[in-house]
Image (cartoon, rainbow, N blue to C red; front, side, top):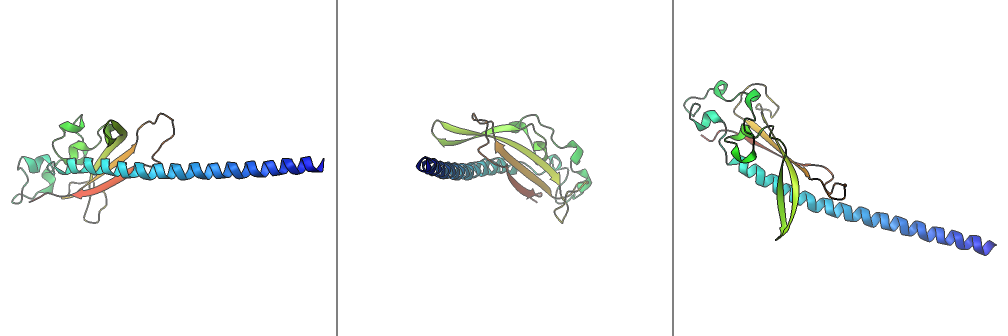
Length: 172
């Protein structure tokens, strides 16, 4: 009888050790996957930000209503009118990207293998201190948030969204 109890305790100890070892292995692998996903999400965010940076600062600077000789910030697009385009590819200036419905971008891991990410963009005027401004200023802050698209397992591979912020001003 004492040998049987000892054997059961030994089996329980081995099982507990094996369970903890497997949990730590799974945790380490999930952390590695998250790190890789963060790298890919950062690349997607940088790609989207570079595309946004290729657009004019404002519709009024693009049509030359506001220029280096006519610097009137009140003529710039009001923040209430941000987000006037319906699709990512149809935006004409930086503030048009604000409030777009979340769209998907893919990252090609290797030929034939892609990972999808959900992307959201927010644009707002900021003051000299970098705080949100309710009136037009000579600086806009663009925030690109990239999150994990729905995975087949139901578990997110990316633990939290990757956010990239950049400030823009007119190029005189």
